[in-house]
Amino acid sequence: MSSLKDEIDMQNLPVHIAIIMDGNGRWAKKRFLPRKLGHKAGADTLEDITKAADKLGVKHLTVYAFSTENWKRSDEEVKGIMDLLRNYLDRYVAKADKEDIKIDIIGERSRLDQDIQEKIKLIESISAEKPGLNLHIALNYGGRDDLLRGFKKIAGRIEDGSLRAEDITEEMISENLDTGFYPDPELVIRTSGEERISNFMLWQIAYSEFVFNSKLWPDYTEEDLYGDICYYQNRDRRFGGR
Ligand code: IPE
Ligand code: IPE
Ligand code: MG
Image (cartoon, rainbow, N blue to C red):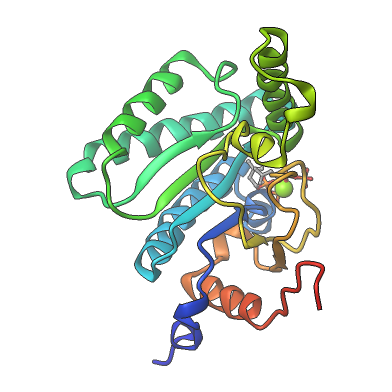
């Protein structure tokens, strides 16, 4: 069977793809299932897409799993998502020997339950030496919160006298964000047909290309990823020049 994978220009593969994984609730609703099962199906899709991106040779994949605004949802739904996360982290640890991908978490951790914070620390230390794709999971992440925390770090250096305000650079702002140690995304994909950013990376997307895919996240497949990469590769990225 032919695959869109063969259409991808491997010389022009995005180094960093970011995904807003949206539509789990609608997927469940269509099937008269509880929202929690939509999130479960979404977690399975994440595993498939991570493997596909790794095999393709993508270096960084950032996925929006829980926003700073998602706490507004019912306690039951938030707990359901957190339990799925626990499960996801435990499964990685259990099969860590066979794992190729590196996992880290971006976002503000102190609001997460203590046991989840411990699991995150463990998984980050286990996966640090893995050779494959870097999977960055955005948890209790908000683009504005990321900038706010970054500005506070920089302001701290001004306060202690080690930095002058006029010496602040764009690079310094980038470095003080949660994503400071990896490049900005060339491609941002949002599923479910919604065409908004919902407080995902704000500074980092200055020149990203956007693909809004109408598929609900649990229905999103490897082939959809390949198709979205091809769509991106046919864009003309001008960066303000001509
Ligand atoms: C995305 O799916 C997952 C999270 C925000 C945690 P949604 O739960 O937002 O699904 P819809 O948008 O209601 O369909
Ligand atoms: C964005 O989706 C957050 C995640 C995918 C984690 P939402 O479903 O929360 O965003 P809105 O409410 O439609 O803007
Ligand atoms: Mg949504």
